[in-house]
Image 1 (cartoon, rainbow, N blue to C red):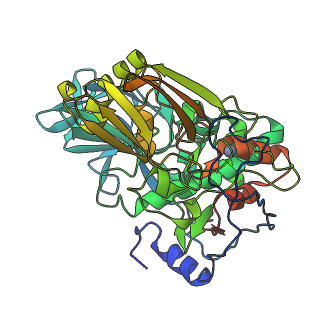
Image 2: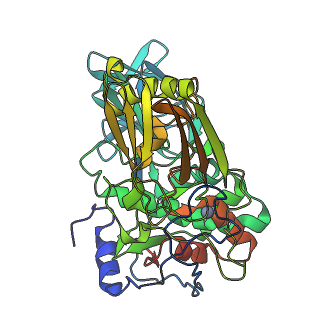
Length: 452
Ligand SMILES: [Zn+2]
């Protein structure tokens, strides 16, 4: 077992001992039922439907930390001046773990970079200057950074000519600011999806700590990791779900699982090897058929407006899209892109997703793999929107030796890896618990209680 972040090491070592036989095998997933299948073009080379019964899941109390691990979340980057408001007395020092001075009066402050240092000021008066500045309220309360309020403290670091703001707080405080941004504000009948989201987001966050140990932050507050908007975005039900699942972590072989999740899987969650062949292929991310017994094989997320969608490119639209996206995504010079002659898919994974795309133009041939297809084959040259997913069938019309038009019938929204949030919400409505939802989407994992 590799070494872990010191914030997790003792508990995870004991987890690993307790979970030595945890990689249970479950029947693999099948194909969308005929009701949900993509209606046109060729059928997919997939297995027959085999929804599996979900055994009841009871979290194991295997090892306990006394308190939640701390996470460091990059909230702002390269800012000229950051507005900071601290509710009362606060501690200020040059590191989160170092010695700090107590300042009796908070209020409106500012943080800016100056000659390689970070300067904390009240009006024109310098309060503190250092290469790094850590600020935390002494008596609790929320810190306001550029108008948004946050739990915990902040580390300000000079970066790229400006200042970066890193929120330092315990993982459960962080999760309260993640849930509403990632799964929305749910109805009472959907509450268990909040609990599943809390467990998944907690596991994902803790899975990053080890690899980020040598860096100045663990998590980005954007879709790069998990969208986090601080205390300003919290909801009562989301906070309750975080508190009720306190310490519960989805693990694989004793490590917190890299529990990715997405908006709508289109009927089958993605095989990480198909969409992100450059990332670690954890076996609990090989994809599952998104259905449960008792639903006649219907996909759990079929009610989503993203479940099936269409996209169309005329030859000129396709040319305009590729002229923008190929230089950016494939590092080609704009002059080499040329006019599209042909577009071909390069195989389909067992999860139904397109593995790659080959684009032939009158200048060059370009290949794009996995999820990057969504950034290259954008639906509209004038918009930043990317293709909703790589679960699609493509129909190319050709005339005069070149592409005349491209039609795509697609399914789902997002990368498709891990928990399908729309499916999780449906499972909650059907009476499944958060733990059952985790077991459905992350096969072979086990939920443990990591801290008190
Ligand atoms: Zn789904």
